[in-house]
Image (cartoon, rainbow, N blue to C red; front, side):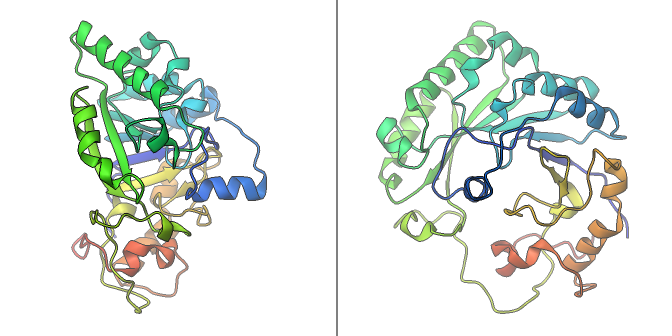
Length: 303
């Protein structure tokens, strides 16, 4: 099989989050298993990055946890940006960005923040983002935008990811007005189909709707992620995508084995063969993925 170069790495440099969003499966796992908060050290991260033969085009900080809990995160981003021409971005709730020096943020070279912000005031925001402070986030957005303007800077781009629920779908137009006035991008999407999501689903907003699951065990090939992207947790474990909520399917550990060996290894290759309908007697995370069950969107038959 012709195995392409990994184009994207998504990494959690902590195992925790400062918010308690009701549908978050990771929050439920942390609470159930009483997982203690820990961060990846800069030295450990440095060893991993320096061991990469090829730096991917996209390096994402934050998957299931809040990267701003790691005080070395902008030092890590700066290291990645020093290695190659790369696009670095962060998924974050942005509540802790004001705990960092603004010069450290800009000197890191980060290109984009994608901020989870689902409201237009404290009440609408914290109905889902439990423990968050809307005004704190908004003031930080204004501070970043003002610094960019005063210094004639293009980056980092600030983008709002507004999850549309039943309680906030009537606020979409007001949210557009609020954030467009701040020159901030905003994207509206529906929540993933986590357990208990039924009571949260919007009544009119239909973007990202997942159709009713099909009964077939295996559908036609569709998912491009195992050819493009790897997800890594705080302990260095590698997963084929960000959809393995319980983090059950580990394909290796970058603190024990080189990333290149894992990426080209038999386990990930078997997953790729499964998605191309070449084999079917292999245990893969895709069988629990709602997109896979619904016969997703990207044909990989010719890869």
